[in-house]
Amino acid sequence: MNDFKKFLHENDEINAEQQTYSEDFEKVEQGDSSNPFAQSSGWYADDFEKTVRNSVPKSRALSIYRPKEKKFRKLFKKPAFVAMISSVVTCAVCFAIFAATYKPTIVGSILPPPSSTQAEQMSSNGTGEIKTALSTFGGSTLTVPEVYDKASPAVVSILVQSQSDAYIQSQAAMSSGSGIIIRQDGYVVTNNHVVEGAAKVMVTTIGGDNFEAKIIGADARTDLAVLKIENDQALPYAELGDSSEIRVGDMALAIGNPLREELAGTLTVGYISAINRSMVIDGKQMTMIQTDAAINPGNSGGALLNMKGQVIGINTAKSTGYDVEGLGFAIPVNEARPIIESIIKDGYVTGRPLIGLMGRTVTEAISKAQGLPIGVYVSAVTEYGAAEKAGIKIGDVIIECEGKKVTTVDEINKIRDEHKPGDKIKMKVNRSGVIKEIDVKLQEEKPEKTQPQQEQQQPQQQQPYYQIPQLPSDFFSWFGW
Image 1 (cartoon, one colour):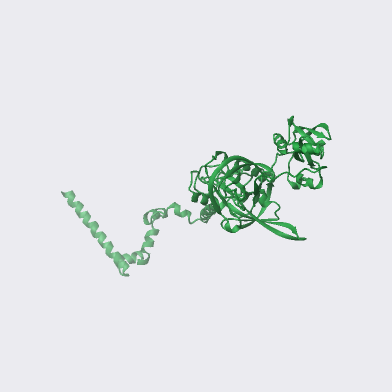
Image 2 (spheres, one colour):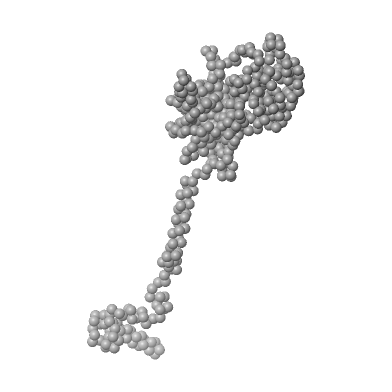
């Protein structure tokens, strides 16, 4: 009990002492200099806090009188750190802009394989191969409007200006046709007869953009040509399908520019009437797709499409006449693909064997009238060509090739095409009643600019020693613009 009273007494003394100090401090703050505490210490109200702070060690003052400053915040006060962060942020922003806007240049060839997936971007594997085509329709069967929306941006109008001499003055002749953009870097496929003899070629897209095109190469045998247009941005391009999958009765859609440029982007609808149709067009044996979709002058070089919006053929010709209707023909895309690839790579179709002569069929009637053996009469020989080097001459009649009797140029060409440049083929010719066996070493067919004289130029320079009777024309009349 005594201890408790003692504790209370000491506590009262402490409280009284604290009360005294509080009153003294209040007087000091109010400027009472008569207070003994102020006179003895020399303190003023303004420096009380500062004096107390300075009486404590600096290391302790930081922890007692103010909160700790975070170390991470200190870094932002250092110029080097701020400069480093600014550099990283700037680089990240620049890379994001570059990645969003960069469009890689296509390197190499070639053409897209048929694809049933949704539209993809160009591969960057070094080959530059196109994986698929424009649009997001995918590979399923589409409606007719969807096919048109998918493929029409890749079908272009081609306007050709050629020079022709008329009335002693040079006049510019204009013609038109269609084409298909097959790569986003501006390669366009069309028919050879559309751009043959062109002095200037202009390409117009369905959106109205005009480009001057360069002819990369052309192939008269397959009636195909490849053009190139330049543009800063990627162009819409068509998806190439697989023509081996089509069947008679499948729907077929044709897009092109019939008659004139004002009718650009015209769509016609029909069916596949026949496949693997062997036709002779302008003297060339061709395998074609037959369709009843309307094909008109100006459609040549345009797209024949399946219901997936894929190109299955390149429209080339139609049969005409007052009693003819619905006979249109297109080059199958599977046959066109290797020709196009070769032209893009080398400017011409490589690996083709060439004999270097022109001939006419000697029928039984001509044989009796002219006293010649049945076979192929050599009407022209290409200068420096394989036939001339082997010793074949104008007036010879080829009666056998590789041990097989031949009566037409097509039969010789068929045997020739089974070989490659550098191979030798055996020919048996009748020269004025004397039979000769000649080995011909096949050359490679090259474009006109690298070949001194073409076979088609020779008949005008070297005439046969007798006149071949005029043969009747083909049953059909063919044309294409």
